[in-house]
Length: 216
Ligand code: AMP
Image 1 (cartoon, rainbow, N blue to C red):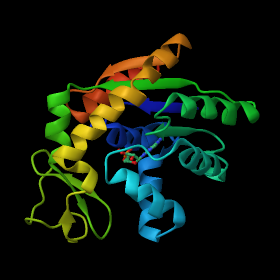
Image 2: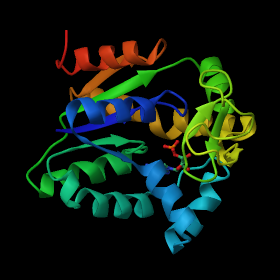
Image 3: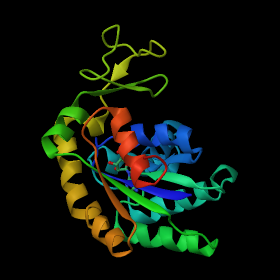
């Protein structure tokens, strides 16, 4: 099963994708995570990507398309993948269609998580990331037990550059302009399923699974 999770930054795509990976046994592939690990490793891609990510802008299509193409050819994505954060532009969506088409495959579902802007700002600006293990927590929804330290490994927490309010606002604008048109794109292809992203995590998961016809 190949599936796309669409939604603005802070909509909960990553959280839901991780839960669905367990539930549906489909590999979770996040372009944001892949880019952040390229940055940690100091690769040429990472260094270029960081300049765009720190400003809340999109990394150029050709770089992201090459990266995802390589990832989808990995053995663990042969049976399917749940794409989180890709595609983010119409050219990326076309490239994905072509990539899958070349292997005789196609996209099965596109789920779009909808969350109002003020809620997105509240969610994103409270998010903190561990400098050691990369785990995320939230000052309001999942606060650290010891101030400033990761609940999982005790590493020092920091606010990602792209979670700062000014950057989040820039990312939301970019989303509206460049990514929101994908809803239309996938609606025209009868693939789009819109899901309300407000509410407890397991309730949002249930709504998604109902849309996928996996649970009732
Ligand atoms: P995310 O973790 O999905 O919110 O992504 C973090 C940042 O990585 C985004 O704000 C973009 O700068 C970059 N990024 C992730 N996925 C893509 C993509 N498909 N196209 C372009 N840039 C991306």
